[in-house]
Image 1 (cartoon, rainbow, N blue to C red):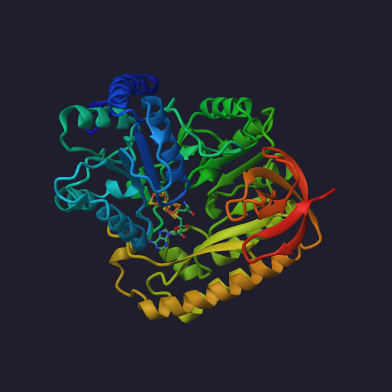
Image 2: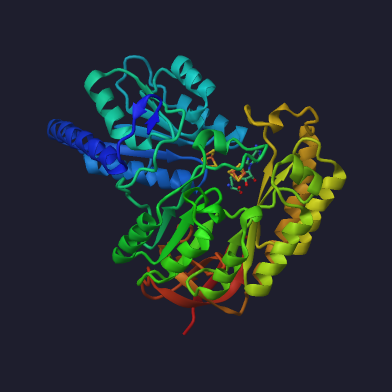
Length: 476
Ligand code: SAH
Ligand code: SF4
Ligand code: F3S
C-alpha cells in the first residue's frame, strides 16, 4: 500500500528501518555523554487520553533504546517532547501556553523540542507552529509516531527543523519498544482510530479510520506482559466494542476477551471505551462468564435527550441506553458504571438537559466525566448556528456536577466497613505512608499496610469514604 506517495513495507520492515536510526543515534548520544560527562535526558509532556499516555510510553521506549534517560522532576532536559490533545479548546490553549514558556532567551543554547499527537494532525496548527513557535525543532503526527528515530536523526545531523505529518493512516505498526510507566498494570492497543464521526468530535480526523490489530499480535503482547509480571491489562480503543469488524470478524471483541482470559499470570482485564451502539449480547455474556473481566464498564452516553443524540450522530436513544444498562446490571449485578457527558451541545434546551439529569439519576454512575461542549473546527457540529451561550452551559454544568457528586458520595459511603479486593500498585502519591491500588470496580483505595505487597491482590477493609477515594487497612 502507499501513504502520501510513500510505499509502506511490511510492518516488521518498517520498524527494522527505524531500529537502524536508533543505533545511529545511540552512537551520537554515547559520544555526547563521554564529552559532557553526563547522560542525555528526556522530558515527555503528555496531554489527553490513554491513547496518548500509551503512545508516550512508546516514545519513551525508543528514547531509552537510544541512550536517553528520563530527566529528574523539574530539571531541564536535552529533549522535550509534547504529546498533544485537541479534543477540546482548553486542551490546546494549555499546550500553546506551555510551549511558549520554553522559548529560550536569544543566544542561549536550548533543548531540542519535539511536538506530536492529535493537535499536529490539524494543518492550521502546524502552520502556527511553523511561523510563531520557531523554537520547535521536530513536528510529527499520530500516523507516523514510529518514524520518530528517523526524524530525530535528521535534526541531530542537519541542525534544521524537521516537519513530517502524514495525512492518512498506514498499516498498524508492530514491534515498537515501550517503556511502560507502571510495573503492575499495562495498556494494550486493540483498535486504532475511529470511524464513528460523532458530530462534535475531532478524533476521527486526527487519529484516522478504525483499524484493528491482529488478534495473534494482541495475544502475544499480553503473553509477554504476563511473563514480565504484569497483573492487569487495559485494552484500549476509541470504540473497543467494534474490534475486528474491519478484519471481517464476527463478535471479534468477545472472542478476543475469551482468548485473553486464558493467559496465565494475568489477574484482571479491563477495556475502554465502549460505545452503546456496539455493545453486543456476546460482550455482556463474556462479562458475566469471564472471571478476569472486572466489574466496571465505562459507557459514555453524552446526552440524555434522544433529539440531541440524533444531532450528535450517536445512533441510540435515551431508552435504548437505559435498556442496555439494565441488561448489563442483570448479567453482572455488582457492576460499576462510569460515563462521559457533554453539556451545551448546539440547540440543547432546558428540557433536553433535564433528560441528561434524568439518566444520571436513573443509572447512578459511580463517576461521570463531564465536559462543556467545545467547538472543534472541521466537525459538523461546529457549523451549527444555535450554539448555547457560555453562561447557560456553565449553569447547567454546575447542576450536573452537584447531582453526580452527591451520587458518587452515596455510593462510596456504602463501602465503609466492607472488605474489598485491591490490586496493589505501589506507594500512594498523596501519602507516602500508604499504599495504593484499585478495586475490581475501579475504585481508588489508599491503605495502610506493614509490608510492600505491590503486584499482589489483597483484601482491604474500608475505614472511610472520601469524595474520590476510599481509605482502608489490610484486612487481617
Ligand atoms: N471514544 C470515546 C471518547 C473520546 S473523547 C467515546 O466515544 O466515548 C472523550 C470524551 O470527550 C468524549 O466521550 C466526549 O464526552 C468528550 N468530547 C469529545 N469532543 C468534545 C467536544 N467537542 N466538546 C466537549 N467534549 C467533547
Ligand atoms: Fe469521538 Fe465518537 Fe469516535 Fe468517541 S466514538 S472518538 S466520541 S467520534
Ligand atoms: Fe485527545 Fe487525541 Fe485522545 S484528541 S482525547 S489525545 S485521541
